[in-house]
View (tube, rainbow, N blue to C red):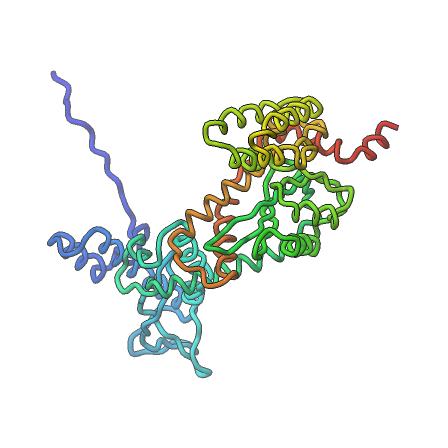
Length: 422
């Protein structure tokens, strides 16, 4: 007798209460299925209609928790159903027009918990602000969303207003951050030009190697006044300027002098080696730049004494035919090797000898604000900059060579090291 080759049937039993409320009611499901079969609705529109039906059923269930089941032509208890009302609720990145039930008692209208939660615009404002920050223009905002029936609030002006609010809140929140117990061991400072607006940025590095946006200010350039404003702002937020730490920046004299004035001997200034190479090579003919760049990088990798000797020799060679480049080489020479003088080596030395960790967030700001053709004022440039930096901050990784940070901390606090040894 041959065995049957038929596969056994697997039967699933679905209870009525397991089905979503709006699907079990034919007035929602059957018309939509009929229109979908006739290709009168796309899949997206179909999902949008289901979302609308689900929200309306959710509001009905919430009303039932307050007033009990609806009994036509009969009132039960103190509360009574009083028809429906067309309202707007916030769903993800859009506003959706739905019908909500109305409840009344002798004192007047009675609220529905589900509607009050959906009517809150805080999350919607955040989502609206995120999409322009990711590079989508306000005119194309609506095309990036899932379309629902009767959706509202996605016009370019609405998106622009929400982005202004969110960016203003983000800038205010940045200025209210506290740095008392953050343990910042190094501060990187660099400038950014956003549509002719000069912005000075400070990025902090804590003892575990994590990066933090500390603050930013707008000004005409990286002058002493702007630098002082930023440092005083950080001091008011709890950053102890008298604490020994490494300050990494370009060769701006205003930055160096202001930090030395406000932070005193505790500030160890490391000038950016990449900026130094750029300052020298831009004064040279193109056919000499590659060789000079190679020689300077090789000198940076040596011990401070040997590296400075090599650079001084390079300046002597350039002095006859390229005096401007030769004069730029020895400027601030000792501060080029500050990290190496503190005993920092390897990957951490390469990370702390330049301002590259600010360059990545700066590129995010440029990419996100490239669609803005006219920054009306410095406040607008600051708002777009802070949104770009906060977006970049989400993906910031620990600095390369972070395991060597205890060596830097010990070098910055030699007195504590001597006390422990004693």
